[in-house]
Image 1: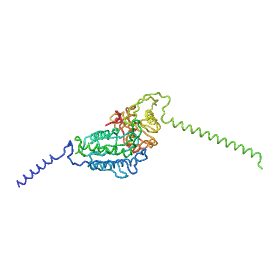
Image 2: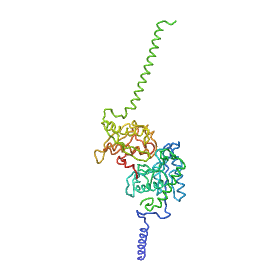
Image 3: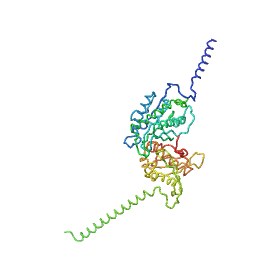
Image 4: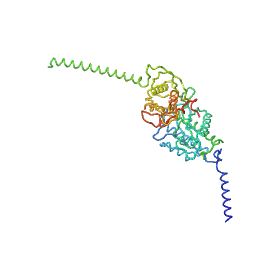
Length: 236
Length: 205
């Protein structure tokens, strides 16, 4: 009886010690090699929601899906686990898009858009003020806890796009869908590529241009995965 | 055989009919001109008697995603709501100009009304909510895109903030009713805080 009680106490103590050694700290830096790194690609619009009408005559929803497929292929080839919010011309609710990202415990979420205005690639992070993570966060402002890391991700993506010779503009704006995502998240909008005289050299649905942007985004995510200052997907 | 008096009556009636037709055409032409004049002048033009004042317009640029304050001199009415409408009308006139850095058609007539209301529950009793009622034509013709729509919304908020410091919040209506987005991207269901729209070399992270 005494031996069994002593053994139980010893077992519990050892178990607690082991758990204490294995539990991830909030500031844990790089994930262990081979850790699950999920990228969520959200091709914006779809179905009845056509998005913008591009100069080429194509609809934004089709251009978004095209670059989503390109990026998914590039990331999958590099060994990433990729989840897309839509694979065809389907109508997907903004809340459902956020649910997909949150259930996937994503390490990166990219919402893809295309437009005929502006120049180059427009990167947007949410304009929510950064907040400390709590166990239960309001659905509409969940992104606030990830805001700092979303801005860091924006820096990494900006660097990769600029390195690829693309013109990039950065901004922080209210983003209805992204504000409910509990992961580092960005909206990436492809504007037409322009020369120094602001003449369009490639529309946002140009396949070569899209491939160039998708390659730069894949390189940025690869860089982001190996960033020692990045922490994993979901915060404790 | 037609009697002479009937011939005379017929000629008189014919002349009267032609005369009335001519007069009707003249009146229609005059009314059309009056309507056109009214459309270009009436909605947002400030009264000619109002003195010209300086107003700060926060102008958007699509090419570098920036908001840049510019000072313009324009006649402004005394009523705050009409004044806000005139300022925003001038801003949208700049966007509709041929060399605009933020190409959006519509111009001054795109702002139907601006209502300035007290903010209930605010710490400062003087805080105001501006309700900007845009026309459906403006929303329908606005280019679609995250950047271009956000710049329009933020430049309106920042321009209101620059000229009416008491305005801390802005809401948007289109043809008097709430609309989900401006042209598919910028959320018009939320209340925008003007403090968030103040430009510092564009809103860059």
